[in-house]
Length: 432
Ligand code: C2O
Ligand code: CU
Image (cartoon, rainbow, N blue to C red; front, side, top):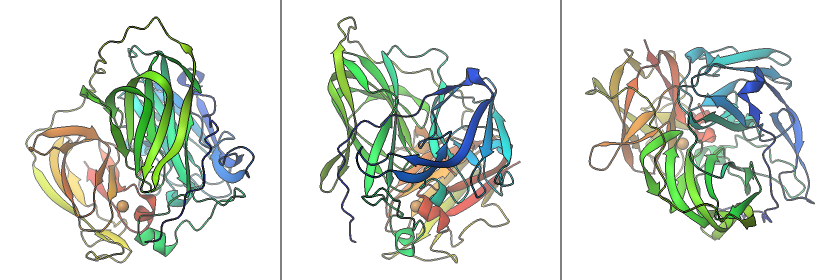
């Protein structure tokens, strides 16, 4: 497979736009065309889609347990819908045309209202022709604040993404070319991180909210200049913080880490040809007041405890290039069926515990996302592992997950490599 060379990143700082707090309710999000400096300053600007004049959209900060109202105005020339990725919300607010809502037509508005039950790091993105609208920039960070924030000097969001872009700044707009869809997906040749803060002090303890907002790229990330622990994955606090080494984030996955700053903090993507700088945090001053101490666990999320599974499904990923069984009538399929069918893949009673074996019978990794719920990855010795909303299953590997389906409605289950989703790797489940 031919690998595109990455465009150089000089890593001039890219900042997230100003945060919008829930106290400013109702929050307004205007989906619109934007011109953005994605490439380093001096290179061409890029015509994209975004929210409130920028790409990524503003960071939204909601309060756990409080009703949020977000009015989305569609100022695009095409329909859209916004999905609040990872939030366990009412099905009607999930933002999935045609499963949970009608399209928001150009010039129309829709108010999404929901009560986020879990604090943590989430994100929002278009869920209409998302392989294209997200690739054009329709995404942003969504933070549900902690009841009691951890003891850190700064809380910094780091949104990572990539784009297939020419040196004049124009996007290569073949978002669904067959070759990409059948392989790893529409992959950028330029990647970078957007940060909500540019500087820290040596000696600071900081929380980093890492979000992989790329449409298809798995990001193996190395954080240099700081040491600490992962405290949450996909928004959910780990019972015990885990020492950070390298962190692999599939598209849509998040990790919260707390680290102590030793020198300028570097965010590097590990590639076959070495490291590629995505972002960095400069040092300005020294924090002498902070005494290094252990990093404590965040308050555990409150989720239903799994019982003994009452149903066990196997979901086989199939199709794509480079071998693998083909079923379904699109490029990718689950269990020989491509795309959304009138009947759900699984039907569950509210509160039912279900085990699903995800079998990757293809030559590519897939990041499988379930809407409206978090599930446990079953770990190597058969126990309940991490809680996630998106799980990475490597080529020819398999993974079991256990989910308590306690949220009624129609929920998508799809590959979050958005090229694979449009290529057929999506299905849905119904919870009565
Ligand atoms: Cu991040 Cu179906 O979504
Ligand atoms: Cu996939």
